[in-house]
Length: 536
Image (cartoon, rainbow, N blue to C red; front, side, top):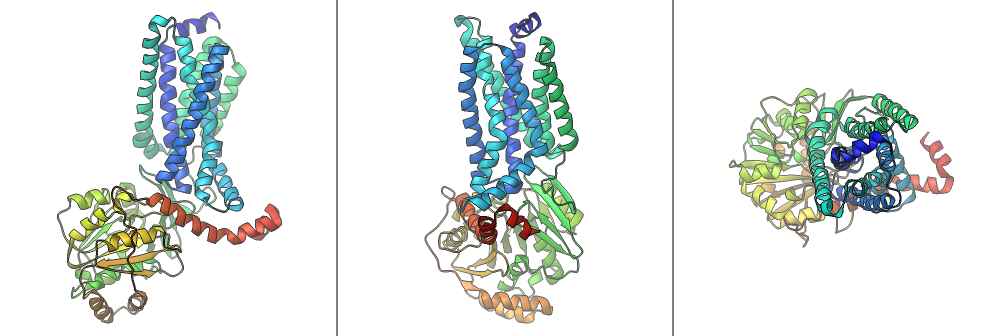
C-alpha cells in the first residue's frame, strides 16, 4: 500500500463512506431486482422471498469470505478491486438482464415440469445478483480489519461502520422506490447505484496510482451500458407499443391496434384493460361483469350506483356508460399513473371520479352505499391478501344497498378443488348467502356474483328481456344461461391466514404447463433445432 492510500485509509472517513455506499447499493440492487423481475414473474410475496433469500445467502457467504481474505492478506487493493468488479456487474445488468431472464424462463419451462415461476425467478436471481452481492458482502468484515487500530477502540469503530452501513441501507431503500424508479426507471437505477460504487473504487485506485487498465475498462463498460442499457423496455421484442414505462407500483404497457387499445402490467401474460374503438363489446370478462346491474331492482341498469375497486384504465366504467348510460360510477385505483394512462389512451370520461387509494383502505373509510361493487384487483398471481379475506368481503357487503350485488373478477381459473378461485369463492360464500359463477369462454377468467336478495335472479331475467341492444342482450342471455350456483366449501381465508400467493402460483403453474405441453414435447423429441423450426 503506497503513502497516498495509507493516508486515505488512516483517515477512516473514506472507509466509513465505503461502508455507507456499499450498504446503500445493496438495498438499491435488491429493490431494483424486484422491479426487474416483476414484469416477467410478478411482484408477489413468493418472488420477494426468492429475492431476499438469495441475496441474504450471497451476503452471508461474502461476509465469511471477506473476513478470511482480510485476515490472510490485509491489502485494501483486493477489497476495492472486488467493489469495482461488483460495480461493473451491476451496471451491466440493464444491458443483459432482460435477455438473461427471458432465456432462463424459456429454459426452465422446457426442462422442468412444475413450479415454473419459482424456478425461473430463482435461476434469474442466481445468475444476475448472487455474484455482485457476494462481492459486496465482503466489504464489512474487510473494512473492520482495516479500521480497527487496537482492541481498545474496536467496539467504537465497528459500531460506527455498522451505523454507516445502516444509514446507507435506509437511503438505498427509499431512494429507488420513491425517486429513481418512478422518475427514470429500473435500468437507470442500476446505472446510478452501480456508478456510485464505480466512482468509489476509482477514487481509491486513482489515489493509489494502480489498476489503470482495469479502471479504464470499467469506465468503458459503464459508458457502453449507459448508452445501450438505459432503455426502460422490458418487452424488448415488441417495438409496436404505444407506451411502456414504470410507476411506483407497476410496469405499464399500452398496445394500440386498429380495433382496440390494450393495457397490461405484465410482459409475459395477462391483459388488465381494453378499450374498443368501435364501441362494441370486448368479448372478455368485462362484458360478463356488466350483468351485475341487472341483478338489482333498478328500473334501468344505468341508475345503479357503482363502485369499482381496481379501476385500471376504466374498461368496465366505459362499457357501463356506453351501454347503460351509467353516470353514478366511482373508481378506486392505487396507481395514479394508470389513471393518467386511462385518460390519455382509453378515453376514460373526466366526469367519472377516480380515487387514488388502496381498495381496502378506501372501503374501510368510505361512508357511501352502492348498488354494484366490482372487485377487480387481482393481477395474475399478484393477489392482495387484504382484498381476499372474509373481513374484506364483509365490509364490501356492508357498503351495498338493499338488493345490491358484488361482482368479482377471478382470473387464473384452474381445475381441482384446491385452487385460488375455490378459496375465494368459499370465502365469499361465508359472507353472502347467494353466490353464482360463470366462466368466460376462451380464457381463464371466472365472474362471481354475490348478493343477499333472494329475488336477484328474477330481476336478472326480467332486466335482460328489457335490453334494447341486440349484442348486449345476447351476451347477457349467455350469462344468465350459464350461471352456476356455487357449492360452498370450507376454504375460508381471513386477514390472519390467506395463502393467496401460493394458491395463485399453483394455478398459474398449471396454466403455463397446459399451454406449453406441446412445445416441451417437441423440445424433448427434436431438441432446440426442432423447436426453432416449428416456431419459425
